[in-house]
Image 1: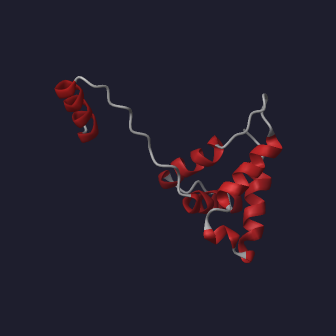
Image 2: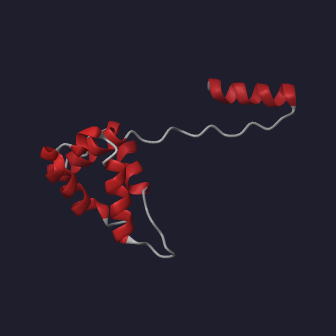
Length: 106
């Protein structure tokens, strides 16, 4: 049993209280930026290290009530822009490529 599950089982068993699930931290925008830049440039996957980052990028979706591709692209761009490296003027083309290729699809 992993330590987190063991601790939760112990807390429930000793106190009788329910323990809220532990949520993973939000994806690091710089990791997402680097991984998305890799698959946008030459089509490489980035390996298993990028699987979570790529999934986090695609999880950013706006539904109003149907899928809104323009708002999704804007939300994804805003998220990537929280990485300081994405805001460097020399990286603007990379950011635009990511959004053009991947920003508008669910």
